[in-house]
Length: 215
Image (cartoon, rainbow, N blue to C red; front, side, top):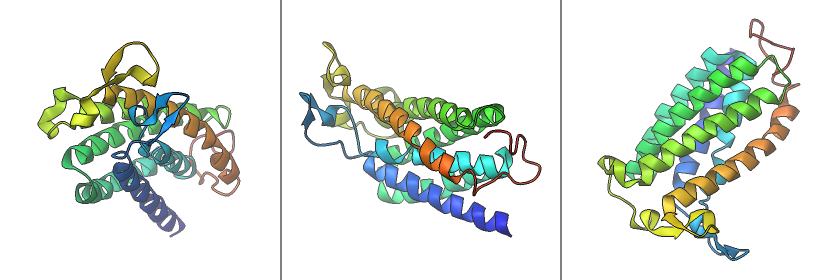
């Protein structure tokens, strides 16, 4: 019973994070910082999406990879349905594909590292998963090569100084992807704080590999 209730909470949280991120990724940050146009660098979705990896890692820690994959699958299905309702179809397709690939990779890496120091599994897994997620999402959502998923966003493919500062220009979606990943790295590190704080409460269930040793 406890497992079912907790799993449902994880699924609901995952759905909320992904749907919110699908909406927020369509809105670049306004203004400038140190002479850099933030709209060429970041969207609001970069700040919310890394929470999905925290949810996956907590599920994996508590119940193991099998249950974590169920949470990801359920969260994926529900989130995609809601995403088609609140975001452009191409964004929904890109988000769903990137989400599933990134989260499944996170689960696999976390499970391999769970017996090491408590911070290694959640940090390394989330960073590797975020890298794959970012590459797939921004390619599928904005790259002209994937126009089969929907029309291009003219603002996204317009030129911008790469990463807002370098001397040569690239499509704006590439600058977004680089900025997005940098923020995900920072937020991923910050997510170690709630992960560490919850370790004593969300303990591994009996039979979960490496329980009590590390992650």
